[in-house]
Length: 434
Image (cartoon, rainbow, N blue to C red):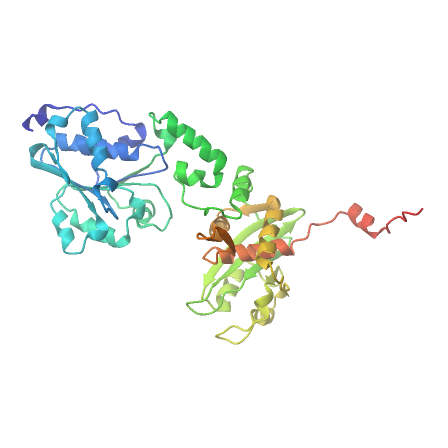
C-alpha cells in the first residue's frame, strides 16, 4: 500500500460537482434521480483515500440494517473502475485503505451519545440518502466529526423543506459550506435507460416528475385530487404574480378550526371574482388561535369589513368549545358581512372536490402569498384501505383544511352572466305547439 503516493488518479468530474473538490467543512449535493451524486461522492472517497494515506472515512445512513443498504458496493466498484484494487483490502464489514486508513459503514439510528464517540477520530463522514437523517442524528454527528480539517458530506433527494438536512444546508447554511444542486441534465454520462424512465415518468406521472427528476420538494401525494390541475395551471402561467384589484370586493372563504392546541387548523383563502377569472390572492392558516388572531391577519392585509365579505361553512353557526360563541356571530360583531353556506349533506366532500375541478381552469394564484395553500391543494388525497383496495374518501390530514376552504369557494362561485344571457333567460320558452 505504500505505492499509493505514486498514483495520480485522473477522474472525470461533471462541472456541477467541481466546486465540491475544494476543502470545506460541509459539502452537499442535492437533486433528482440520475444526477450522479452518489457516484461523485463514491469516487471522491477513493480519490481522497489515495491522495491522503491514513484517511478515515465513515459512510452513514439514518437506518442501515445491512451492508447491502450502504455505499460499500458502490465504493468497491469505483476502486475497480479506477484500477487501484491493489491498494485497498476489501473485507466483509469495512475497506482498508492506503497508509492504514479505513472506510466503515454505519447507521446513525443505532448510535447513542456514548457510542458515537467511536467516530471522533474520523476525517470524513459521508451521509447518504441524507433526506432521511433525523435532527437527533445530526446533533450527534456534527460535533463528533471534529478532527482538524474534517469534513461532512451530504447527498440527498429533497423531500420536504422541513427535513433537517434541508434546514441545515439550504435554509440556515453554515458559514463554511459548499452546496450544489445537481439533476439529470447536469450529468454528461446520463444513461439511455434512465432517459426512457424519465420520459415515462413525464408522460405517466407528471405530478411526481418535479420531485423525482428535478429535485423539487414533494408537493403532491400519490393520487392527489388536484395534482394534474396544478401542473396545467403552472404550465399555463396561472401560478405567479397575481395583483389585487382595489376596486373589487375580496371574498374570504374559511374552514373552521377551533381554539386550543388540539384544534384543527383555521384556514382562509382570499379571492376576487373578476369577470370570469378567479384571482386567488392570499392564503392564511393558523392552529388553536382565537378569532382576534384571524381578524388581525385580515386587517393587516386590508381585508376590512367595507372591502371584504366572509364565507363560512355550515358549522360557522356552532359555538366554539372554549368561548361558547359562534364564528358567525363574532365576525358579524367585528362588522363583517358574513354568509354561512348551508350544509351540503351526504357527499359534501365529493361535491367540493368536483366543484374545485370544475373551476380550476379559471383560477389564477399568487404564488408567494398562496405558497402554503398550494401545498395543501397538491397534497389533498384520498384515504385508501390497502387491504381491500377501496377509497374511503378524502384523508383528513394537514392538507384537508386548506382544501376544504378552497372547496367552499368552488361551490359558492357562480359564473357571471352577460347582458345577452340575462335577456335570453328572461324570455319565455316558445310554445312547441305553435
